[in-house]
Length: 185
Image (cartoon, rainbow, N blue to C red; front, side, top):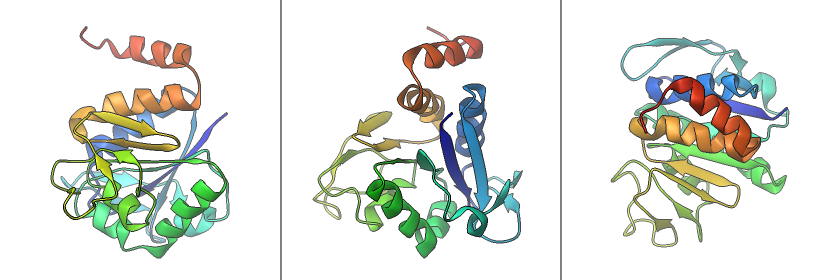
């Protein structure tokens, strides 16, 4: 069963965080949410209170199939300012594991130096071609380039979660989860 690590920082986008956690768990993917501090309660960008499973320090040496960063501000800035997140990103790629980021969180991947030569997407304006000329930035809901997965924002969170499910499992599991959502055609 795939294992996914989702760091929750104060100011994260709750719609993205909860959608990713919920849909991946519907696919029987093990999701571990972590706080950047020993305080497990997180206040998301719109004031919603989230409770992480554990702290980042408790799982730093554990292996995960995917490190997945929810966006939102200032949550993405908090992730970007945490050296442990940058280290974990680089460890994931060194171990041929995946990393994902949505909304403003692809900036964390850019600052970690892992998007150079890659195609990625993000919330419009978070990363620009002028500031990041080595990244092929596109305006698409979801982009998968090798083992780097990115998405644009709250409105693309379901599509992103479904793409992750298919990436980590198979198309049948994605279809089963999607059917249960009763999405419009």
